[in-house]
Image (cartoon, rainbow, N blue to C red; front, side, top):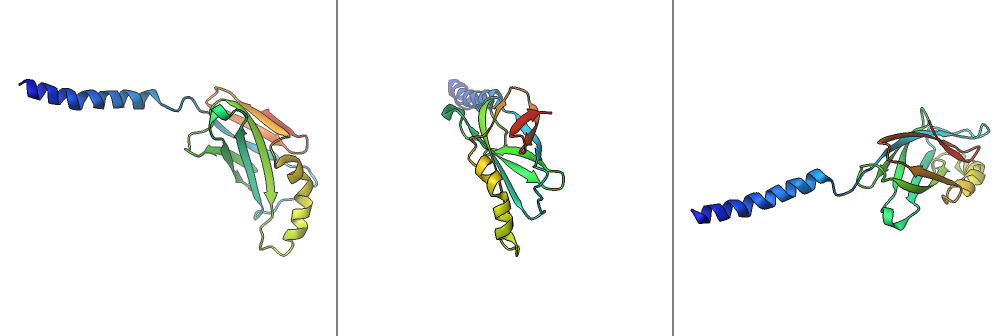
Length: 151
């Protein structure tokens, strides 16, 4: 009889601890960050242009950042971290880069037209955003003004 009790404790106790650990969430709180990009009026994008948006943590203790998945039809994006959960609260450097499709006949000319914008925003030195504790955050990245604002 005592053997059965020990066996139950050996199986049930670890399972209970594992369940409580899973419910508590080991990664902490994260936020879903999404928004739109406002481009300068003289900049024309084609549907084939690649727009990359990255959020890099300002503090090495924050862990990894995230990448924005851009949709050209409505100029929107949603940020995904490597684990797909969103971004933990903290300050992030935001980088934006536009690259024309390499197979297009005028890709070199188009790349030159993106040069100033890419030089200014590709490093993340010009744009920053504070992710707060709010579960969902809608933002606008304005590349003409060099600002990020909440909607």
